[in-house]
Length: 355
Image (cartoon, rainbow, N blue to C red):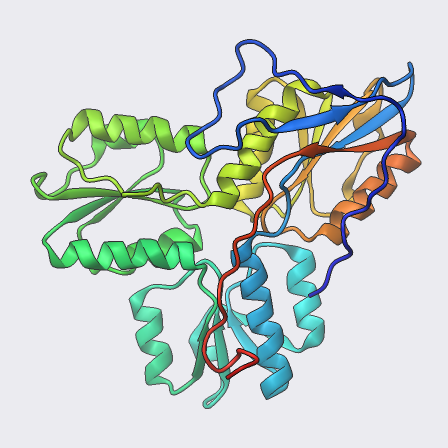
């Protein structure tokens, strides 16, 4: 799905460098040191929009959507997708209009059909059932989620049990926990760590849902280490680069604005974490699926509006939100300096242009 390129619309007034306030939470490991926003003076009663950078689509989401679109182009409609390909209403509806059918139960897929697994990943049981039913399968699982699955399988063969930090019921958590028949224990908060009872602690490893709050995950991980000092942790953190980068940008943005708007769907974990983070920093924040959900009352007395988007929200929605806020009186749009993300994941065999 194509989205418009970011606008170059900026005001010509002299810019002041965004200064981080004293006492703000420190940026996490691998964060974009030196993230800045170029700010301009705003006259009383006027509004300015400050765009977080980076925001919106990540490489895993780009890849997942492209997998469905290429499958439709190559094999024709319908293409069946288990669960929402990514957690965004606009994206799902756009793909439905092109011929994708989203299902939860494999029994709803006719024999011989083409099936795509969503970006969140699936359990071994789902994989086995799909193969047994004879579907033509394309796996759109984000490679960073697959990395966690591979680590779980490898360590399980070495006799490890696992503590998984994540949200119960989230499809990524269900997919990761479903890599094993037993021996993987979910914790959602620090209190859960005190209650978990692994069968043994000599070989115990921790894994994490990729779209969590970086700060919350660090706090829970610390509690796990305190209770199980010999626990094995990932060589690289499981929280994905895009989640980290977007949260770091919000940490810089939030203290400098009066209001933060997050573009994202209610089912999007990483989008929800952005809203929660802004609020934790003391800035009012709202999450909207699209521009129609903006409420004029939110903007009363507001001069600077921070705007970001979750990793599954397309830029076309951000542009529509900008237009709506401008209609409410915003007179300039400024973009933060931020990390340029260049990550790109390869497509599955059978869908590549050179295949």
